[in-house]
Length: 354
Ligand code: GDP
Ligand code: ZN
Image 1 (cartoon, rainbow, N blue to C red):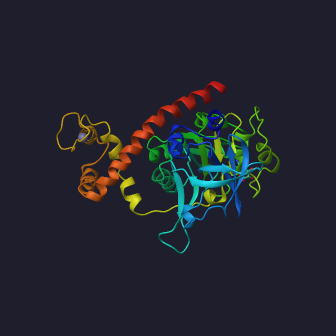
Image 2 (cartoon, rainbow, N blue to C red; image 1 turned 90 degrees about the vertical axis):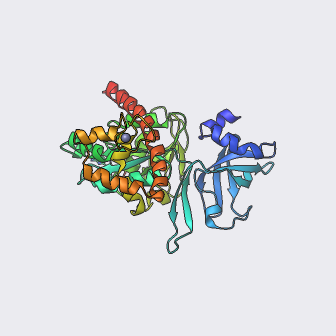
Image 3 (cartoon, rainbow, N blue to C red; image 1 turned 45 degrees about the vertical axis):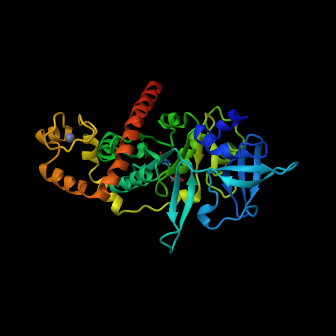
């Protein structure tokens, strides 16, 4: 029974969360679309609907979002179920509700990877890409940069190089969704039934990319047809869609409109290059003074970073608040290193095909 759930993204993490509901009474269900009064969910018993009125939640954050895993009780003889609980989320994308500072609204849950889409037919906005990267990292989601519309760009290599300069080894893929060019490089990220969201400004080609990914030749999933026929987002299609070759795409209006923010995060992101270098230091607690095997000192000697910059970095480092933040960045960078390997592999696959 669990095997069937895996295609919807079920894994050991959720299995562990489900333990307290593990009885014949409850089954796991994943929210595929939210309607005004009910949710549609994927379960091992097929697709069901779950009423919103069944359970009382205190505030909007407590309600399930697309991508959430629930414990539900099936109503015998009906295609309906009653919600018992939302399983703890692995990740979430949220936004502040307009007009409030504290109330957040979850726009998508349990996203593993996010494609950050930009278009190459206009000036590349590197600051915007940086903010998208921060948004992804702050939500604990692995980013992949997708540069679309290569067919309209004279110097793709140059564009990639520019983006690479701010990406800190985030994978970058240049594609043309219109021509289905290099789109298959993106398919590797869906392996292991990963859930992927696609964000970027309006018009950069998000729908076209999703169409390409979902209209694979092996297509045999009924709900993919909606994307193929209509080509565009409609309110009736699923917001969590199975990809023919495995994995899922989350595409909700809330996710598309997610706001970018600047501020405190931007400040520490500014020293990512030093953080990145310090991962190479011999000692994990290196103070970058004159310890042996210090990568920062070497970078100073070779002129990769300036004394000035290191000084301001150290100043920040002394602040406890920043130190906590640093732990966070370090964890993210380690994660990114792992992904770098996967992206190299993805590029290899792309090259073999052409
Ligand atoms: P979205 O708003 O991000 O979902 O963008 P769409 O997928 O709706 O695409 C916006 C426009 O860009 C449409 O007219 C697409 O046909 C066009 N488009 C998408 N991808 C490409 C591409 O790779 N090359 C070109 N030339 N146009 C594209
Ligand atoms: Zn060091």
